[in-house]
Length: 307
Image (tube, rainbow, N blue to C red):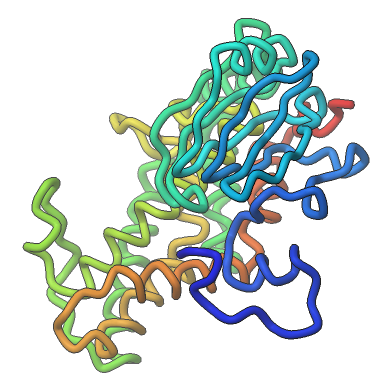
């Protein structure tokens, strides 16, 4: 959604105006994170990243120039309309800062680039936990406990907990259908045939994809691997899918049923995008992801200590 899609509230600073209708704040001199913030990433869109006197310089579409504290960042998210010079990639790599190419507000994730000297402590801890059958199930148990806060999961196998989750989600779909007065025939998605699904399924597919994009960027920026999961397997991004299940109920499932009747049989991607952004902001998803990963893995995020 463009910056000017909604009128900004009066009496607010520029960063506050941007927060009102964007997930990720467009970088300006005012919104640039301070070193004390230990910010894991910043998001750039519609501009050029180059090097001037050995420092990274961001020139936005209005010719505003912002010098970026690359050495204090874990990752740069490059959104639509960005260009980057070869020299900038070189300097950014020397500063141990990763790059991710994403869609607007990171709702789509395209690719990432990490430096040969990247800090791999978080990924190593993740791999150790995943490779140990007992510890891996313990991580999965903590993930399921977020969705079954009153259940005693001690001693339950991964297969048993996955069965519980499958039943819970099917019941949740039926509950939301009744709550919002929407007919529900089951989850259906055929890759490459988005339009074949009903409106509810189309919204679910779109919002799920947006959630995966946000989580992929976050996982990369914190130095974890999206490919090392604890519940999902045999899929491209098992850790992203593991994390996504913590947030889908509020961000995707409830949203899909809530919007179905409003659309009156005609899918509106702009309405879905706007409503999804509002929910992400309301629940402070970007602030929760790092804390939730630490809680699920039971280890401290090593990159939080980076000075």
